[in-house]
Image 1 (cartoon, rainbow, N blue to C red):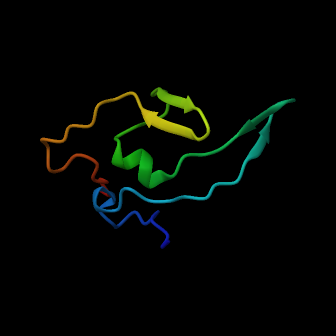
Image 2: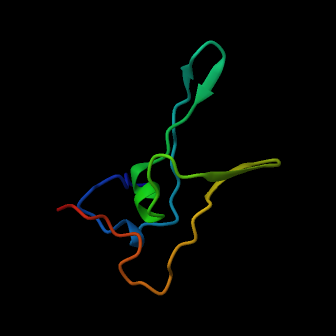
Image 3: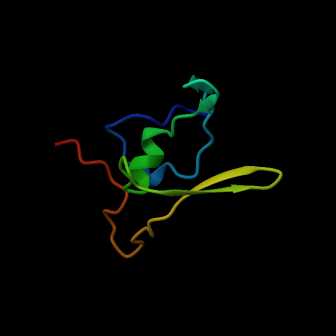
Length: 80
């Protein structure tokens, strides 16, 4: 799949997508993974916002903020 983290692209048209991320060590026993910038922008998230993590056979991360589907500019990146 093509790279999607291009700040000049309207991310709203790129979802859904598949991302591969690398795990990295934090602290003494923690493991972390970063979330793709395009996904963060698509959902209008920022540092401090909460996400839900659903664990079954798969791991699903989804935003807790509702996306405004009535706003045609929702999820667009502001490069100004």
